[in-house]
Length: 154
Ligand code: FES
Ligand code: FES
Image 1 (cartoon, protein in one colour):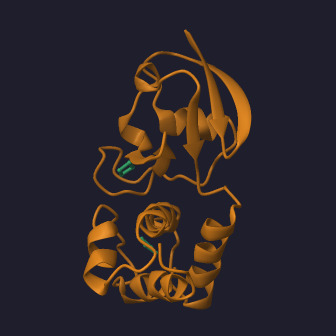
Image 2 (cartoon, protein in one colour):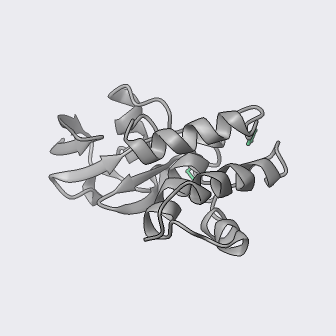
């Protein structure tokens, strides 16, 4: 077993897990159910979370790869920017079945943190690691664009 001290969405959490447990499972066991398992192979983006500032497929990282004292941001975060993105997805009707949406929102958050004014192509590129089987992407891109238009340039 390994013990990890984590900061999840700003709050400290101590977790005990098998070295081979996936980060996705650790989070879900701790009650963070927003990240979803789609492919389970690091390809669809449904399980995206931020680990130490970097977007990762949490289905593809095992506990022994997570440094102690790591900082994790999940879809459950209620910080201002991620909340605005969530609202924009709702306002734009960007979700159908919703399964992929937590991953899209986390990836959109990473994109807008790095670049508040992405071009349409940069939005597509920033979300290219996420797959949606329902929406056709147009409303998702529109939702991200709308938030970007409301942000100051960085
Ligand atoms: S479930 Fe992790 S990338 Fe698809
Ligand atoms: S909304 Fe159904 S997979 Fe994206």
